[in-house]
Length: 224
Ligand code: A5P
Image 1 (cartoon, rainbow, N blue to C red):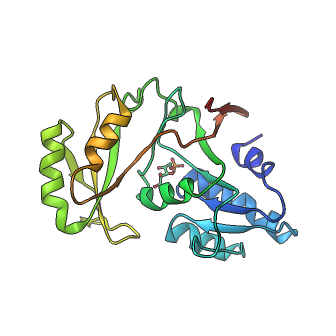
Image 2: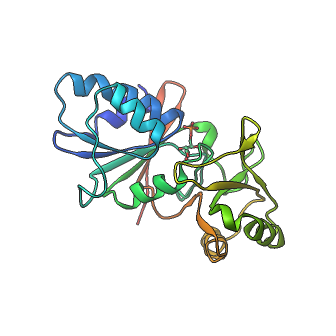
């Protein structure tokens, strides 16, 4: 069993579905395509240009937040998941649209491998933890200085030797993290810096996390 297969079982005819970004989301969208071709009636709301392009190639009908009041369910990956199902996302650069689509969804389902589980956000045992922060280009110098002063020295994300530009036309600062004592306080601190659009902290948002552990899938639900 795979996390994409378990995710597909949560879908019913008529649903509006959030299509996440990144490898786990791509695997899910690729599994969804044949089901739509076989007659499943859903509409997708993509969280990035790349997920929209993939969905279009697979003939998955798309809609927008202007045309629907809410989504039934959203499927997306994550970079870190703590025991309370708090998340860090955004290494794929789509964090702002991902957070908007997740917030518009009645159920947010996260698809990860077991290597994404961390004892605490910012305490990744496998690699340096990073918190992506999306920033309006004009504000980049200020936000960079403020994040450094807060103790989170950031590096502007680059792609092909140039600053990475998000689908929203913004830059991303990747902050080196230590284990985060109070994620909600950190989120508020960073979001109060003028020029910050959003952070990769997805707090109290995940309803279910599907964890791929070898050929098994572990289902974790948030207790509210
Ligand atoms: C995209 O911006 C991210 O939030 C991804 O959802 C996250 O980085 C997980 O991606 P992978 O499934 O590729 O690891």
